[in-house]
Length: 165
Image (cartoon, rainbow, N blue to C red; front, side, top):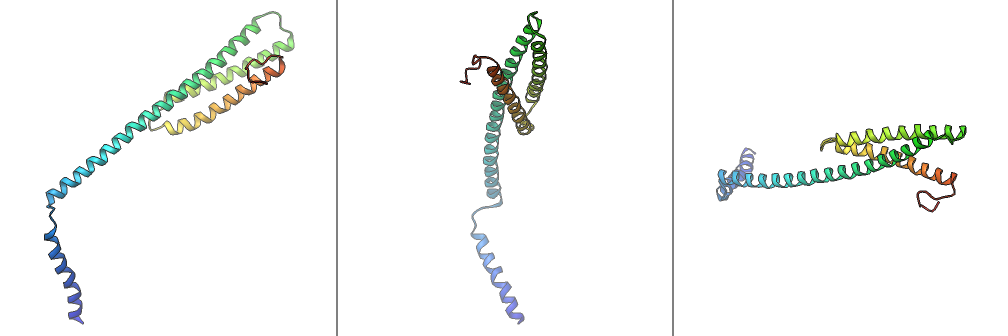
């Protein structure tokens, strides 16, 4: 029994002893191969990081462009509303409606400006969360803006936004 256990252990030990010298890699060669492989991995990681930085900066610039355009549209409508309120020809009910419009426009403009500040303050580590929250909030404001234009179209006979409604 004891001989059998020794034979079982001895056979793999002998095989290992015969195979190890057959490996042509020395410790230095193995170290060099490992370093070369690590350098390749690092190069790939650096390239991916550069693409990621370029991607998030591009997405950020596009989102800022859209938000600034939305803010400018709201600002133009706010200027128009202020001009109407400055005029003397408004009926009391029209003035009340225009003041409500001005308040709503001001509220939405503040939201958009806050979104712009969030996007401008984003960096590569915070971008994904900022992008997600900003997209949702921007869609809410854009939806509000579309409803506003549709309401204007319904109150007038002209299609101010040229969307066929």
